[in-house]
Length: 176
Image (cartoon, rainbow, N blue to C red; front, top):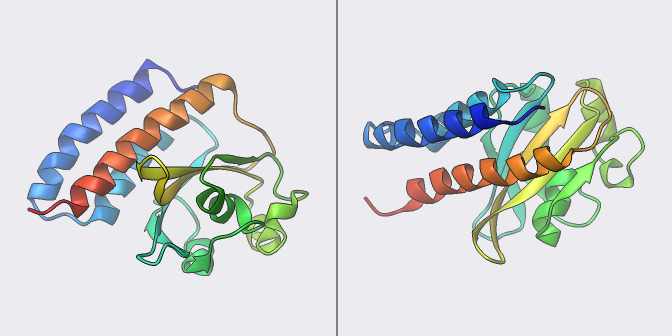
């Protein structure tokens, strides 16, 4: 996943487009899907998703996942957060990034391992999306078909992406 100047330019363009999309009445899911497709277009072998924390702060709900298998998204929609709840459920619960380099062997994925492997998902890096420090509103995840961990450059890029995704979510929740 060679994040670079191209990623920065793509996300800046997406921010400009998202403003017009919101004004035109596009859904948050559609806006986030376009953000995630822009990210996916900058690298090979990655799928992305955004899960949103429900109003109670206990369950993750589908936000966007334009390239993820629908059956996988449907199965994890509404899952409770907590320790050992996959990368996203654990990241939302702990409030910090969780980088699972091999879903097939990581204990955090015990409840979802077969589902993930059935869809060819082998690595998942999830980072909580904060509305403010310590106030998690969702997660941003990158999935890979091969076991691997993020490079330093990729970790930096993940935070860049998260900022843009958080802005899109918060803008959609702002009063008109």
